[in-house]
Image (cartoon, rainbow over all chains, first blue to last red):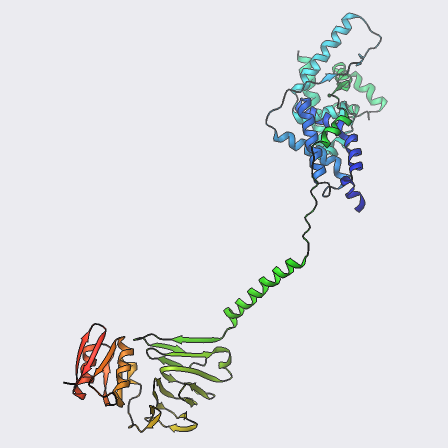
Length: 171
Length: 301
């Protein structure tokens, strides 16, 4: 344990840690602020804090420290852009065999609605929802990452789904 | 509500086959399915980890290492110096038991010693003693004139540059001025040591040395020295000493013109009014006086 604690101060170990988490950290920051440049800034600032305080941070807690720091840095900013999520290029439709233009149009329209609806979520709802959907994380993992209870995560997820459904169906 | 729980489970991929088919039957499941499906295919802007790391390294950060203060010799010296200063100053503040009292011209002061004995200091006098040693031996040094009311107890010693007075518990007056040393006993018995000889004084007796010669003095009947009632009284005392007492009580400068300073004076003068005091000195001696500010001249007609 003792030796692990100072591992973060070793450059090679820190680099590995950095490369391993930079993408998920920047995703997380993006779910919050909706600006890719700002997201990367948050991430770099958070990593800086970890590097500067490497001797004080328990390495087993480093990941959650990273996410907490990003969250705090985000909370310190006053404004943020509307979070509009993009779809991956090769996103398949649910019915892969149906190639009728009608179906495709309908699905494209749904995708647009979903994008708009996600932008309406609160920061807390959105980060939980997207961490679950995109990163495929369990509620327990999300709870650990955000340092809240699993119950709280489930509540946010439910409320997020409710907002999304209501919004999509009402249009 | 159960529905809600199942939905959450399904989003976590934890829902069993049976429950899923049940959930599928619920209304608007289609929307939910689409939400689940399409949201999965969203993505945040990609980051090139290597590039990001390169950019990060350019930040030129410093590790904050825990502060380590070297335990070097210089610090020890500094600390030691401070300790020495503090210890010595506290010694002088709290453990220095040498007490000193001084009176100015025309001022008297009443002191109580640690054993309850009282000392009344006449004008322009100086007394000091050690508080710590007082319990084991009562010893004090005096320059000037003071009246002592000594509590019964161990030997009580008053040391002056002319001689030493020792008592057990009495009331007495000690006067030590330039070329003048006088002890008067008011109660009990006082032992006066002068020039290696000891004289015992019963109440009403005085011991006086003027110009290094012991003089015989008439008995007195007062219970307290007259100076304590704001008066100085003299019994055949050379005029020189009377004048210097006058100077001590009034803060003036007295000059004698055409007057022998060995003239003996018997009488008293008040400390409250200079004119009256001067008259009570000059009339019995058939002298005149004039006052010029702080200067007084006594002269023969």
